[in-house]
Amino acid sequence: MTDVLIVGGGPTGLLLAAELRLHNVHVVVLEREAARPPYVRSLGLHVRSIELLDQRGLLEPFLALGQQHRMAGFAGIMKPWPAHLDTAHGYVLGIPQTVTERLLEEHATAAGAAIRRGRTVTGLRQDDDGVTAELAGGERLRGRYLVGCDGGRSTVRKLLGIPFPGEPNRIDTLIGEMEATAAPEEIAAVVAEARKTTLRFGLMPLGDGVYRALTPAAGVAEDRATPPTIDEFRAQLVAVGGTDFGVHSPRWLSRFGDATRLADSYRAGRAFLAGDAAHIHPPTGGQGLNLGLQDAFNLGWKLAAAVGGRAPADLLDTYQAERRPVAADVLDNTRAQMALMSTEPGPRAVSRLLSELMDIEEVTRLLTEKITAIGLRYDFGADDNALVGRRLRDLPLKQGRLYALMRAGRGLLLDGTGRLSADAWSAQVDRVADAPADIGEAVLLRPDGHIAWIGADQAELETALSRWFGAAHHTGPGRPAGSDPNTPQALSTDPG
Image (cartoon, rainbow, N blue to C red; front, side):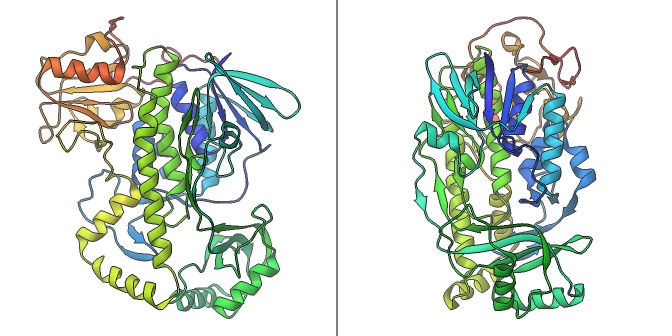
């Protein structure tokens, strides 16, 4: 029996697989497509996603292949990046989803995850001990847990019978990659003029004469699985911009709507949902891929603890309790952005007013924190410290950068008192004799970098340790802080 079956080999499933492998969890990823898609759906990574990559030592290749942008946007309104944002990574990283998926797949396979392409899940059965996935062709695989990361039309969600309520599409937008014969100067001028009234319009150069094109559709398609034709695209480019720019040779044509849906539950027994399988929304603000990565980062260490028999009784339930409200907030801000991008006079007036308000840096900072997910705080209950539940930015410590000490995916006690102990949890928590003075004498971080406790009292610390890491169980000195989890000594090479 495999420890965890992951259905869906996109960014969410790949990062989740890698997170589980940090803890030697046996993982099999089942992906329907035989190869990674060649087209680009998402174009960038936001601050919190950049931070989590940094926390696992994965950021450098992404930085090498991406481009840093310091412009803040909301509903198509662009402003200078706000100063003093609470992060060491104050930028949006422009990087095609194709590259993101490749890097994450390379990382997951190097860590020992088995990725099986061309596998379509057709049925699920679960009992008290595990979940059986039935595949097209008759193959069956069994795992102790299963996670559906299989997108907005999730087969897993449907097989589990989890309701997916929300609003249907009211408008469609055509999107695709294609070549164009018009001169770049003409394209830029037409797009600039059209976007004065229609923000869902544009042609962005991808290189070698290929453009990523976007334009409002003529109506809402009933058949969501059938892509638009190049003739439909040309007609809509002419309708909005007055020219079709000579577009031809499409690489990929698709459409997206403004539907927003949120799964009633992120869990059904031993099966979970993550990424678009749990929530869909318009792509305004570029939050979809990032939201899925952050789902995986939240679920990974918790699921690994359950597999290892170390999880407190309610730890897996905190996944939904923490992540579902975040998705609900993203759905709300994308609803707001879509309303502001309407061509109707009222929304255009509100958009102009918001643009003026965004000249106030505090307003732009608030919206940027929302879009980039660094402003969220998980609700940990009665703790009245406003920092508990928030993620901690990267900080310099005596033993090096904070995020460099978190690469093993373990908890971390930053002890500025020099007298606190987490020895009874040493198999899961590292201790560093240092703490940021502006936060507290001591700080306990969960493996995802969120603050679990701030204080100086040993008894209070042990209560927090028990809550997040289970009962005390001293088993030795544990792994030193900052050790590389991908060395043969630290990580099994069992392919799962």
